[in-house]
Length: 82
Image (cartoon, rainbow, N blue to C red; front, side, top):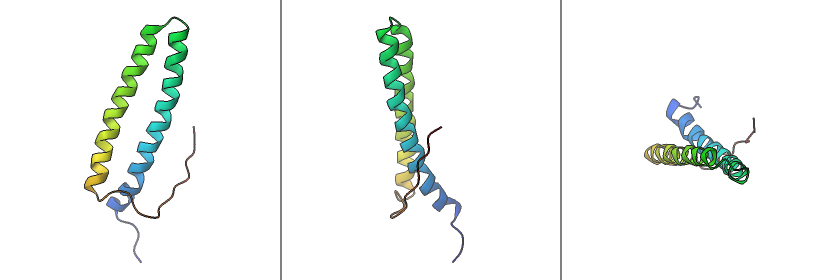
Protein backbone atom coordinates (compact mmCIF):
# COMPACT_ATOMS: atom_id res chain seq x y z
CA UNK A 1 0.00 0.00 0.00
CA UNK A 2 1.28 3.47 -0.82
CA UNK A 3 2.18 6.15 1.69
CA UNK A 4 -0.51 8.57 2.80
CA UNK A 5 -1.21 11.40 0.43
CA UNK A 6 -0.52 14.93 1.61
CA UNK A 7 -4.27 15.57 1.99
CA UNK A 8 -4.67 12.43 4.11
CA UNK A 9 -1.87 13.69 6.34
CA UNK A 10 -3.64 17.04 6.59
CA UNK A 11 -6.86 15.26 7.67
CA UNK A 12 -4.85 13.76 10.53
CA UNK A 13 -3.03 16.98 11.43
CA UNK A 14 -6.04 19.33 11.49
CA UNK A 15 -7.85 17.64 14.40
CA UNK A 16 -4.57 17.59 16.34
CA UNK A 17 -4.05 21.32 15.78
CA UNK A 18 -7.64 22.07 16.82
CA UNK A 19 -7.34 19.97 19.98
CA UNK A 20 -3.98 21.50 20.80
CA UNK A 21 -5.42 24.98 20.40
CA UNK A 22 -8.31 24.13 22.74
CA UNK A 23 -5.88 22.96 25.42
CA UNK A 24 -4.00 26.26 25.15
CA UNK A 25 -7.24 28.21 25.41
CA UNK A 26 -8.06 26.47 28.69
CA UNK A 27 -4.66 27.51 30.03
CA UNK A 28 -5.15 31.08 28.76
CA UNK A 29 -8.53 31.31 30.53
CA UNK A 30 -6.88 30.27 33.78
CA UNK A 31 -4.25 33.00 33.44
CA UNK A 32 -6.81 35.61 32.40
CA UNK A 33 -8.53 34.94 35.71
CA UNK A 34 -5.23 35.28 37.56
CA UNK A 35 -4.54 38.60 35.83
CA UNK A 36 -8.03 39.88 36.67
CA UNK A 37 -7.73 38.72 40.31
CA UNK A 38 -4.38 40.54 40.56
CA UNK A 39 -5.91 43.80 39.37
CA UNK A 40 -4.71 43.58 35.78
CA UNK A 41 -8.05 43.65 33.96
CA UNK A 42 -6.31 45.13 30.91
CA UNK A 43 -4.09 42.05 30.62
CA UNK A 44 -7.08 39.75 31.21
CA UNK A 45 -8.95 41.53 28.40
CA UNK A 46 -6.01 41.07 26.03
CA UNK A 47 -5.79 37.37 26.86
CA UNK A 48 -9.55 37.08 26.23
CA UNK A 49 -9.03 38.76 22.83
CA UNK A 50 -6.35 36.17 22.04
CA UNK A 51 -8.78 33.40 22.99
CA UNK A 52 -11.41 34.90 20.69
CA UNK A 53 -8.91 35.03 17.82
CA UNK A 54 -7.99 31.40 18.46
CA UNK A 55 -11.68 30.48 18.29
CA UNK A 56 -11.88 32.11 14.86
CA UNK A 57 -8.78 30.21 13.76
CA UNK A 58 -10.26 26.93 15.02
CA UNK A 59 -13.48 27.62 13.12
CA UNK A 60 -11.47 28.08 9.93
CA UNK A 61 -9.49 24.88 10.59
CA UNK A 62 -12.72 22.96 11.27
CA UNK A 63 -14.22 24.18 7.98
CA UNK A 64 -11.07 23.06 6.20
CA UNK A 65 -11.31 19.65 7.87
CA UNK A 66 -14.96 19.35 6.86
CA UNK A 67 -14.00 20.23 3.28
CA UNK A 68 -11.50 17.35 3.31
CA UNK A 69 -14.13 14.87 4.52
CA UNK A 70 -13.76 15.19 8.28
CA UNK A 71 -11.60 13.28 10.73
CA UNK A 72 -9.89 10.09 9.62
CA UNK A 73 -11.85 7.30 11.33
CA UNK A 74 -9.89 5.12 13.71
CA UNK A 75 -6.94 7.49 13.88
CA UNK A 76 -5.79 8.23 17.40
CA UNK A 77 -2.85 10.45 18.11
CA UNK A 78 -0.85 10.81 21.26
CA UNK A 79 -1.07 14.35 22.55
CA UNK A 80 2.05 15.79 24.05
CA UNK A 81 2.34 19.03 25.97
CA UNK A 82 5.16 21.51 25.62
